[in-house]
Image: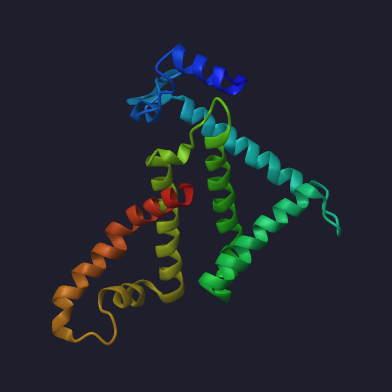
Length: 203
C-alpha cells in the first residue's frame, strides 16, 4: 500500500469525515450584546469580520496614496489599477461621461465589497459579511437614495417623476397598466434587485 493510500485510509477510519457547514454558519452566537435605549445590539463573528475588512481596506487605501510616485510601487499600482478599472469600465463606459464624478463613490463601493468577499477565503473567518442579506441591502439603499437624488437634482422633482410615471411614446390609455408597474419597479422593487446584484458580486 502506498503512503498516500495509507494516509487516506487513516483519515476515513478516524471518523465520518468532513462536515459541510449548514445554515447555522450565517447565524453565529453573539460575542457580546449591549443595549442603547430600547434597541438591542449583538456583536457576532460576522460583525467583527466586517470591522476587520473595513479597517484593512482603510489601511490599504491610505498606504496606496501616502507617498505617490510617478513610477508607482506595488501598493500604489494596485490602488490605481482598481480605481482605473472602476472609472473606465463602469463610470465612463456604463454610466457615460457624466458618470465620471461618481467614480470615487463607485470605487469605494467596489473595494469595500471586494475586501469583504476576500474574507471568505481567510482562515478562521471563512465567511463574507456580504453573505448576510442585511449588508448588501444597506448598500443597495444607499445607491437607491443617491440614484433618486441625482435624478431629482438634474431634472427637477416633477419632470423626474413625470418621466418615470408617464413614459413618453406610451398611449394614454396604457398608463393605467404601465404607471403602476413603473412605480413598483422604480420605487419598491429596485432596492431588493440591487441587493441581489451585490450578492451576485459575491458569488
